[in-house]
Image 1 (cartoon, helix red, strand yellow):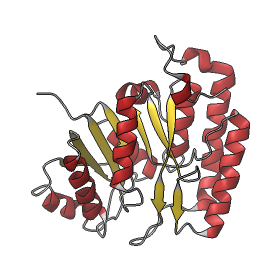
Image 2 (spheres, rainbow, N blue to C red):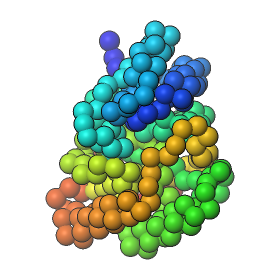
Image 3 (tube, helix red, strand yellow):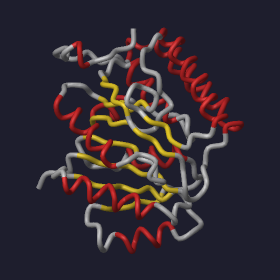
Image 4 (cartoon, rainbow, N blue to C red):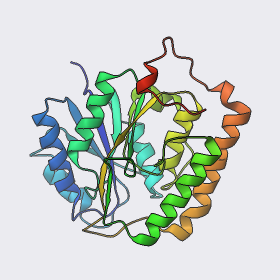
Length: 261
């Protein structure tokens, strides 16, 4: 029996209010599209009823499974736990609060199917993208941070901090070791993929701010962590990329691929 084509990893820390609804919407949409899938929720040391809700939901959602992330908790650690355990040929990281609509995940997967690229990266700020209910201060910080990364790495991609991305299995294997414990993993994964020579397509995506529960991202605490991982990837780009850089057997259509210069 073959495994799922697509795995969806969802980190969940105290998400009892929304995680099951998010999983249900994803499962129904992927099933309607005929996409073989699994939805792997990583319960990140929740102190509410998140795990209980997941156990109940597994009786109605056969493609759902969950694992418990051992202490300490942290977004990056939870995602890494899921990336060590997913079974699909490709994997997407999706937020538990339904910020990323299932239709966009289907579009990402269809792009991966129809091209030879290794990754599909979302952009909320490309033409056709949407960032709804984004707090103004966080939007400004986001745009400044992404501009800094674009200039530093010479990229055209303008939403590196967007968590919503899709990777083939061999990419995740090729990005090891992963270092980030927190939300800076959202930057480590794509920057390492770019630096190590994996190809990617940028697809506009829609994002909606959290309506239930509370955000786990604290900007003041995250600044130094983001900077560390950006500089780490920059050093790798210039000093040790040759140790990791992937050499593809055949170059995909240049019109469909964007590389770091």
